[in-house]
Length: 121
View 1 (cartoon, rainbow, N blue to C red):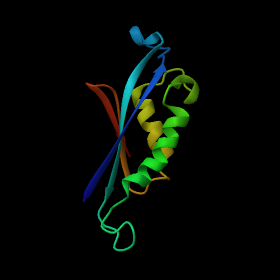
View 2: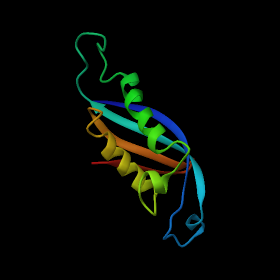
View 3: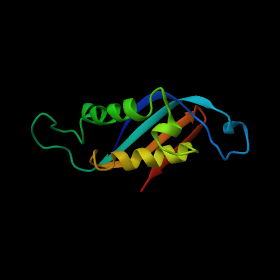
């Protein structure tokens, strides 16, 4: 079994409307997102020989999503929720990418250097 990871970062703001602490106020984070891909078979021929998936193919799918919905965005607007938690983000991203990246196994979203969520089905 091969486990591949591609890491991305972006800046975004949000508010957790129902939170009973400081996060009920507008704030932002420097997020790190990790796309986890699993596979067992290497490509046998062609330009992707001996790869599970080309990292550039992953980047070419994920980067436009980040640009459209996440980087320097107000997440409550782009993700259409009044409480965009890191858990909500991880599932939203997984659901968005699931049909676009073969072998997608999980999405990890890091809200701070010590706080992260990993979502998989």
